[in-house]
Each structure stands twice: as C-alpha cells, then as structure tokens.
Image 1 (cartoon, rainbow, N blue to C red):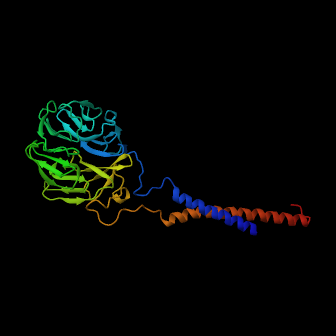
Image 2 (tube, one colour):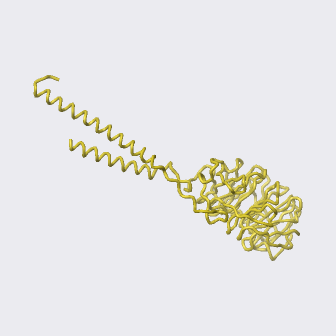
Image 3 (cartoon, rainbow, N blue to C red):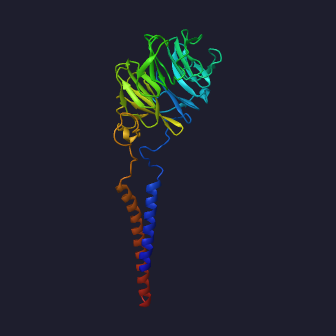
Amino acid sequence: MNKQIRLGAAILGMSAIVAAAVYIVNPFESASNAIVPTSSQTYVGGDLHTLSAIGDQLFVTGHEAAGMSRDGGGSWTSIPTLSNADIMSWSQTADGLLVGGHEGLYKSTDHGATFTKTTFYGDVSDVHSIGAAGKMIYLGSPQVGLLASSDGGKTWKMRNKRIGQGFMGSMLVDPSNPLRLIAPDMQSGLVASSDGGLTWGTAGGPSGAMSVTWNPKNIKEIAAVGMGGGAVTNDGGQTWQAFSLPKGSSALAYGSNGKELYVASLVGTNAQIYTSTNLGKNWNMAPAMSQNPTDIATMDPRMPGMSGTATTPSSRPLSALIGIFGLGTSSVLLGASALRRRDRAKIISKKALRSGVKK
C-alpha cells in the first residue's frame, strides 16, 4: 500500500509539473501587448514610413516593402513594383497616384496595383515628401528643397531652396485653394504656407512631425504624429490637444468618409493598422475585434495624453490553473482507484486458493 501511495504521489507531482508547463508555454495564449503576427499585418521591413487612405484603399510603406488594403486594413496585398523603393510619401493627382522615396519618384495609373519610376527635375533622386490637389503637386527633397508642378508632374519649377529638405511624409494641399499647404517637418514640426510654398510659418502640433492628415469633410480637423507623440486640432491649428496612440505608431491618415482615423504601428517588421472613430479616445485593431482597446492594443505611456502606466500583459486567472491542475489530479485519482481494484482482486484470489475454493 505504501508503494501505491508513493506511486500516486509521484504521478500527482508529474501532473502538477505538466499542468504548470501547459499554463506557461501554451502557444495559443497571448497577452494583450504581445507581438502576435496576424492576417491584418503586412510586411514593411525594419521601419515604417507612411500610411495613406485614398478612396476605399489603404496604402502603407516601410523601408523594404509596400502594401495595399481594400478592407480597412483587415487583409493586405503586396506591391512588388515598390519593393525596396523606400517610399516616404503618397499623393493622389488628377492622373493617378504619385509616390516618392529614397529611390526617386513613382507613378501609378491603375489605382496602385503597379508603379513605374519616372524622371523629373534633372538628377534629383531622393523624395521625402509629396502632396497634390488636382494637377498642382509639391515635392520636398533633401537634395534641392521644395519643387512645384502645375501640370500634373510634366514639368517642375524650383519653389523654395531654403525649405523642404527636412520634410517627411505626405503634404496636405487644400483642394479648394492649392496655394495653401501643410507639411510635416522633422526639424520644425508642422509648417504651413498660404502662397504655394514661397513663405512658411509654424503650424503647431507635435515636435519632430513625421505624419499629418486632415479630415476630408472638415479640413480644420487635423491630426499629426511625431517624435513628441500625437496631437489633434479642431480649429485649423490654432489650438492643439494631445491624444493617445497605440505603441509604435508613426503614421496616420483619415479615411475618405471622414469618420475613421487610421494609424499604422510597427510590430517587428510588420505594419499593423488601428482605427478610431472618436479622435483617439479609443483604438480598435483592424479589422475591429473589440470595443475595449486595452484588449487589443498596448497604448504607449510616453505619448502625450496618456495617464497611468502601460497596459500590463493579461494574466491567466487562477481558476484556469486550478482547472488544469484539477484535470491532472482527476487522472491521478482515477488511476489510483484502478490500482486499488486490481490489488483487491489479487488478495481475494489468493484467499480463495488458500481455502481451496475455486474461483
């Protein structure tokens, strides 16, 4: 009997160890802030540069790749013609899509399915910022400054040699007044011009601006993200309020309907899209999976507008561990019961043989 007790205790101990191991390393259990690749992510490389919403399409680019989504970031298609083009900015012109990067200027006339490289303004080959309204296009390059085209990119003229080198990301061009534009400047924050880029002034917003977008239904509503976090204005830039962003966010864009604000976050080497319908008060992973943003995204406490501490990894409740342990314990008890029945049968058999009774 002592042997049985020792055996049962050993099995029980092994069950506890196995239960704990399952509890710790179960690959199907993920914390709320763990990096878990999903179908809603797309590969961009080690850096994330741009996010753009054009019509019903989302475009996101990084150092090594570009992706396109037609379902709000739920699924993605890669754009092979932009592989390793290091795209930094997007714009929609009267003739199609125009994008710029470290490898030059690219154009698409098939809604972004394919792009071809185009030559412009001599030997300029580095484009960090671009913006357009109809046939009016502005281009920022660290090589020359600010260029402008009034014929859809067929010809270019120098607009400002002293500014534009620090621009990064897509510029905003007022469709009702193409002389008015806003640009993200890594050195000066957001800057604005009302004379087609000849003169500029500061426009507020976060420091080290990397991405800016405005609501196409109300261009006084502007959101931006930079090294100083995220900020939004409802009065065209006169006053700004900080707002929270999912961790790793570096680019944002309003949807064409003006109801959703999209933000792109770098997760490893993938881009993950989040959406908000209340100017960053809540964020949902695309496609929306929960109304509670802390269930799906870790907010960065370093971003302005955040309070408290970072979201901690969700822990499995004690009841789950007890349940797993209970399952192992039940197995041990059932096994011990079977052993006792077997031993009892042997004892009865031996007694029967000694008394001469045939079984």
